Amino acid sequence: MKTDTRSASRLQHDPLVRGLGWASALLGVPQVLAPAGFARALGVDDAFRHRSATTAVGVRELAAATGLLGRPHPAWLWGRVGGDLMDLTMLTRALRNHNGRGLGRTVAATAAVTALTATDVYAAVTRTPRSTPVELTATTTLSRSPDEVYALWKDLKRLPDFMAHLDEVRVTGPRTTHWRASAPFGKAVEWDAETTQDDPGRLIAWRSVDGADIDNSGEVRFVPAPGGQGTEIRVTLRYDLPGGAVGKAAARYFGEEPHQQLDDDLRRFKQIVEIGEVVRSEGAPGGKRARGEFPQHPARPLTEDELKEALA
Image (cartoon, rainbow, N blue to C red; front, side, top):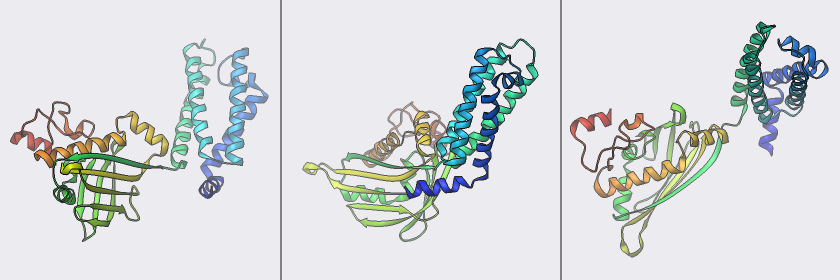
């Protein structure tokens, strides 16, 4: 609740948010009071359907103005974005069915709404909290002892060998490291981390330090499998997903679903532990250029040329 109050207070004094609030008011008043004249100003006739649509848009603009000027919240900004898309749809339809009279005014109105949409999108994105807490868990069983599995994971420089979105881990001190990873939509993120627990053969835990692009923490537990059949590795990751809930949904849509990423990473780690390398298939010939996957071929070692291409 305190966070929401601080956010509302910041938006209350945000020049761009207040400017958009007044823009909504200035657009809404004439559309409600004189819908026929406003429709003609847009280059369309004052038929009943046009007057009705203009009035409805005016009411929507006045509601947005009340919200942005009275109790500002990112939801009002996203509401403006949705309204802009509706307006562009109606103007595009009007252009398609135009009789030619006042066409220039309709074209100008469409250009103005397009520019306003870009402004609204920018305001909504930059004024929306940019992270959503996420916790991921995954488990797999490996046919090696806990000490062996721990030793492989402890070699942090090897993590990018099986974590598709991890580009580099650099050891910077006895308990500190620097990480660089690929994020959705071609972005890159970096952070420094510190080891908070290190119990050989049993547990490794870490957390990011202040200033990280993504606040994160995690732990890996190495548990003897039942019947002495190797090791059960249990991974827990906690982090703030960039882009908030919208970013989370968009990432999933574009094939960047975090739970699936972790499952795939552990599957590749199992292959490295048990056979010494990632098993290749024909599924991703473009390597990391193709959705961050690894170049794969049937289960056989890579040739020298293939290895050079993979490393490149």
